[in-house]
Length: 334
Image (cartoon, rainbow, N blue to C red; front, top):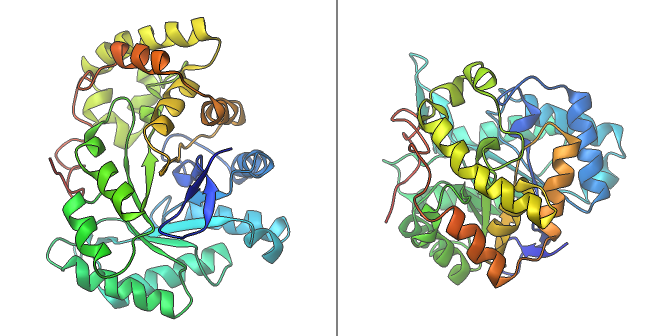
């Protein structure tokens, strides 16, 4: 598999990683055994980047990763993995969602993550959401101190604007920026992909198959109705969902004619957009993971790219990627 440098002169990892939100019940019921099977398949294929967060299942994802490591070689396996986690999403005194990038809060949350995963360091620590009132330079300095303490190997940010990335990088090299990117979400092309390439920052694309919409078997409306996040997400609500699926049916037809899965085409398209891009799809299915691997190994011609983009041109998707509440936190830019 192709390798991506995780930051300027950073370690290399396969350009496909594991989005470990799926190790919780966020997209449907799962189990540790299921997560372990996915990790078995990933490691066998040379996929070593695991991307999690302290809030995924309120620590459940991290506990699953820790249990897997403990049961499969401990420190020997840990040293072969590239583990990323995040912090910064919090609750205020009234239980409302908020963002906290204070030094003491971030270190305490990181310590909790390390304990759950049974490790004394993570390879990459992201700010999950920026606290808008706190200068990003101050937050970057906080992360640098965590590097100096040996608790993290590198630093990153999730869902930030190119201008914020440049400010952070002026303090310390930023190893990775994570943001949603797929054939249905093209906003990173408005400067973020370019800033990452210029600064030597890896771009980590989450939801690269559009939360199942760019696959052969998207979630059914009944399944969506049972998932709190998707049930109120504009792209999964009527009439947008049906309209999106009607459009993606043309991509499914192209995939079938090509002899590959729709997910493979979607992943291959994302990775084609730059050598500094890593995709981190989440899945609860080893069969689906095999399709994602297929995409990471698929070479697309210029003609194939043109065909895909003719079917799903910029701006094709019906509905915003977040509703008003979900948009609180990510930085918009143009």
